[in-house]
Image 1 (cartoon, helix red, strand yellow):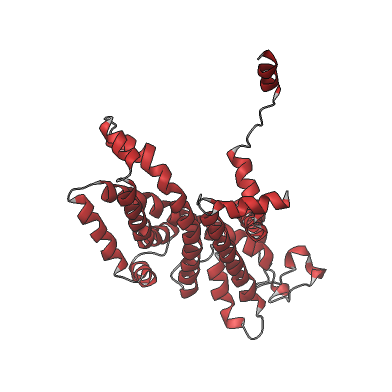
Image 2 (spheres, helix red, strand yellow):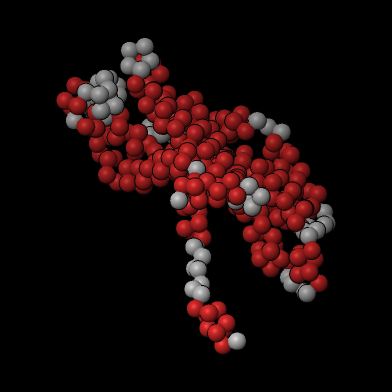
Length: 310
């Protein structure tokens, strides 16, 4: 008996990896998602550091370099993508413009997710009149095309960063409201929620302690996908001339400014347009990975892939 206990105690306990390590392993199992994540991190780094390091270079005109062609390193590395109509380096302007583009998209997504999910939690958990009134608010907003509503509002208001964030956030609220409400309607009938109610748990504790962690992965997946949509919407508004105005820079505004030169200097619109496409594509790929990684019924695919790669 003593020998058995000694042998049992001698067996080393395997330490399970933390959540962060597990997420990295799941991400590494999908090489496409890993590439997309690296690109998104590069864009975020440019958005944070670009305006600090290259703001002066991106706004300094040099008429000798007007519409300079790309891949000509004789004028310096920053001119590798060419120069714009005032001779400003396109690489520096794209890096600086990423700050405004990402800031507007982040503000709109975060604001719409907080407001929409909060209203969805109230509408889904409430069994009274609020559960019927709040969804009608989403129906009213969704009755107008989101981009058309943004165009109308920004035409009447000044096209500032705050107004753009506000308008884009309002148009995206119904997505989070309806998703959260549908999730809560299903979760509130589960046994663990009913057990918490019987034990006398408060409504706030049930919502934030038991229900919110269940729907948060879905909201994060939608937010990642919605980030790409909002970024495209902001670029469209800037392209139409009712978004962020010069001297501020966004990728959509750069595409619009290069439109008159498409036949003679195609690179003025091509490079910022390519930045929009690659960022949107990367966010969509990350959203697909998150949908699989956060779903326990599908996560085994990534776990098997991670073991093979390991």
